[in-house]
Amino acid sequence: MNLLSRVFSYELPTEIVFGNYSIEQLTEKVTHLNGMRVFVITDPGVKEAGILDKVTEQLGSSLTYETFWDIEREPDVKTIRKATEKAKDFDADLIIGVGGGSALDAAKAVAVMVANDGDIIDYAGLNKVPNPSAPTICIPTTSGTGSEVTIWTVISDKENNRKFGIGGSTVAPTIALCDPTLTLSLPAPMTASTGIDALTHALESFVNKATQPISEALSRESMRLISKNLRKAVHQGDNLEARYDMLLGSTIAATAFNSTRLGLAHALCMPLGGKYNVPHGIANAILLPQVMEFNLIGNPEKFKEIAEIFGENTDGLSLYDAASLAVEAVKKLNKDAGIPVGLSVFDVKEDDLDYIAEGAIGSDNVLVNPRKPSLEDLKEIVRKSL
Image (cartoon, rainbow, N blue to C red; front, side, top):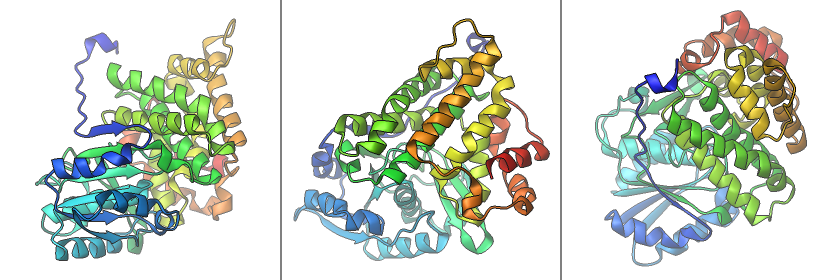
């Protein structure tokens, strides 16, 4: 359908403050939100890297704060309940999340529960949270998930081997405070996996059926930034210009998919993360080339444009051959960034294909994918990714 014939909407509930050393604005932003009792949520790695201290130093003696740093990768409902109890006992009136997607998602979940009754599982789905979350400031330390601006938080229910999302404008952070200097200490493997996660956000949003002019413009710029800077960020971790552009690309990608959802890579990531503990960014990186190959026929014009964004020469090629260069470009980026070659390194086996495909097929991300898959199609994508 021609974009000119469609009605679309675009909403970004979160204020974005972006720039080197923007962390120095933290106290000003907390005060603006009338925060007096601040609950800071992070993970052990961020604490050990000294980044938590940089945050609490900004809060100084003028504000009362408490920290919680027990957030694990793919945070579990039990952890959210524990953190929520501590935040309520502290009588927190503002939540700060510091870290990668896990810490930021946990902070958003706790902010939901500080302002709402019941259990976190009660709010699984879209627009299920009745009351706006407690004021929330998210401070990313990776360039990948974009959780600092999204309307979603993703939580694991490890007891039932699943992950679920909670979404809606009431879930979005109040402020995203994005300081590229806080990403300088991110190790190369995590720089790579989170960077490809951000690329997957931009790319899947760009080619899916819910795309619209504002999200498309954001996706294009995100892919341009990531394709030009990920290799430098991985192999020259102290390159602040590359770190700046990677964090910018990640945040922009999230502002794109907020309004469009994603595609098959993210649909398959949910069961892979829920049961097999495959890190989200790595799962996306491994799946993305196979998903792109499957989707080429559904939107070859967009895939040709992606190839050109990556610098591939499409002159004189047929549309499909030009589109196929996008897949090769992503494969080369994966290789140069050191992404694992397949899911088998996480002990995913052929016998697991039915479970993974059945866990993905009901995702809303499947509904907007540019090509409708069957269960067998999803199994084949995962089989090729083993």
